[in-house]
Length: 362
Image 1: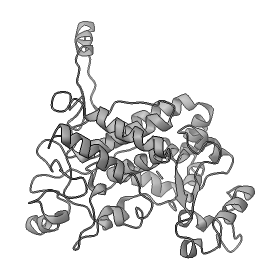
Image 2 (image 1 turned 180 degrees about the vertical axis):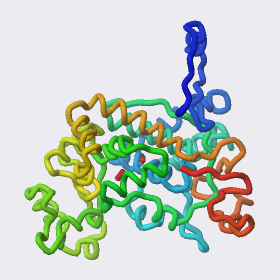
Image 3 (image 1 turned 90 degrees about the vertical axis):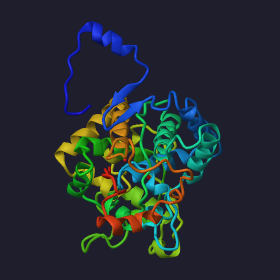
Image 4 (image 1 turned 60 degrees about the vertical axis):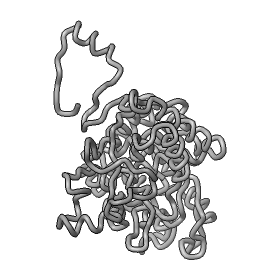
């Protein structure tokens, strides 16, 4: 409940401790489906666990999928919507295609939930739960409670993704700006960047540091020379053209574990992206990096809080949006990807005739 301070008597606190559902800002609640669909979170957990057992890399994919959803029009499940004949959806924007993955896990969870509790649980909430479960599986049981009650958006446009998602080429000022407009702090940005300790990246996201970096140096001098040599072997010159599907792990030390090794790598010039290296170019950001190098527990605690905060970014609640029956398609009767609705309301920023409210790797 950011921005407010509540003072309780000891007895009041004792009473609150007994309440099964805890209110968390933005109209969301922990335990939102306790009565309407009590098995919702466990069904999502089962779907994620099954996918993780088959491929542990799916954890990074689900965390990134949630981040890319929340940074574009808010945490409204719009990243899950498929492209149609008259609209290119978020998932097919250059920052998302072909790198986003995990859609089939959300589909599996949604199918199981619809069989148990039809028309109750939103795709946006399923994605938030799935990201939480992915964090727990890859982060040595790093857990947190997810406030729920999100509604699904009806608009998904590739241009929105291109205009809102932080770029791997961003500098420190640009990164802080990207997060500030989403009501996230500079420290939140450094904390959430730690998710780069799991997952893989396509060559096109970092070859700018390996070839033709500047007139003075072909390779970015801030990257370890040994690391640059390794990456150049994986991603030959012009790899984005000739090897579009080539990927590499983003963390050399513990690529399948969500831990603080990302920050240790940064301190040793092993950051993969320009945006990773940027965290060392600003004194305030570097202070946070140094803090997390020294204490993994501090990072774990702050990462859990930052994930909850990110999951609250400009959500749809109440009667806004809809509960999508198929996470890939807006419900029958809704405007296709929001195009007709925008024409009717005269606003490209509204999700419905009602007020629309918007709102963190690879």
